[in-house]
Image 1 (tube, helix red, strand yellow):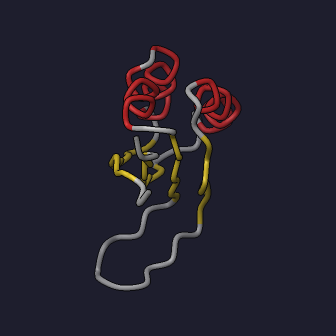
Image 2 (image 1 turned 90 degrees about the horizontal axis):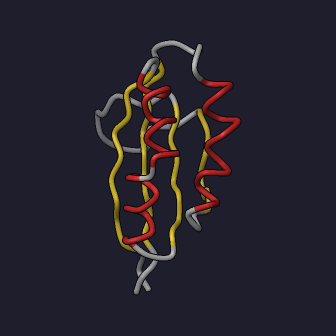
Length: 98
């Protein structure tokens, strides 16, 4: 099975949720065998006319099944509720070239 990546772009509307979310999300990702490849702000538009997100991330998982298990997990969904209180996220799941 090929590795899989969750790629996300986030618009931040308030920052009240961020300390608690970012203190906990690394452990939840790691528990599901995920690794952050990219996690940060300052996205730069290289081409096109899309609205830039405030932050972007890429998480690598050993396969799609583990990525889906992470996304559906109670621990992540609890954090997702917190995140949604002050941000909007677009996320996709894609396979690695392996």
